[in-house]
Image (cartoon, rainbow, N blue to C red; front, side, top):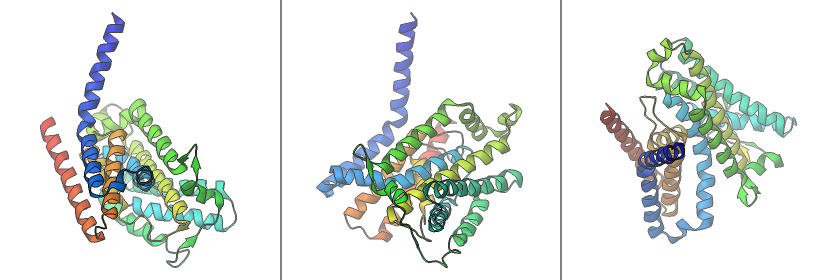
Length: 323
């Protein structure tokens, strides 16, 4: 009897999973088919691996953005945090401190910048949109201070190996995305902290009445977002062999688009890491396909802007149906 009930429960879960992700998965397949007809090299193993490597920076940043949007907040500073994190790593390596201290200080800088965003939002009751617009400008200015706006080369072999070497035939950068996806997915869907994040974003008053420390949840979530952006900064600088002061420009828009395309509601309380990963793959396929077709950059901006509008429209329609 119990075995029959378990089988029935699994079938219900499978049907729910298919309904939840069928639309976005189908969109990804259709996009790949269109680009493969336009350019047969699009579906080659080499290009698909290239897409996964290209999307890694956006995907990890989008994992952090998903946490923030689940609270009904927004973080527009992650592009600047990506740049600052890369510069911190480059400066520490330049001082001769080695790979491990550089990595720890880089991730710590991202967590600190995220904590500042969270504290200003939670403790001063400032809108996260205004806070992160301000810190986006501040952090972007800070990244240029050490070099007066010039790039900083990174020659440490351990650092550059992250973006250029492989493990078991798969690029290390893809392994990092996979590990962080699993970690964020488990933290969000399998832990008390994840459930409290959903409740806080879905109904803040109910969360307060339940005894949840909403301010602490908010600050931790922004710290997660900053840390994920710092990881993206490590990956980007390792691929470029340098820290660029203009690194991460507009990456926050791609991260938002990936999260919303994946079903994360801008109103908060709804979203998954699986959806965000699929959304990031759509953004990556779109960028790669348009580059292969030599679509001018300004047209690419127009297309991505339209994608964001469509994603937000679908989010609003979904919210209306749920209501």
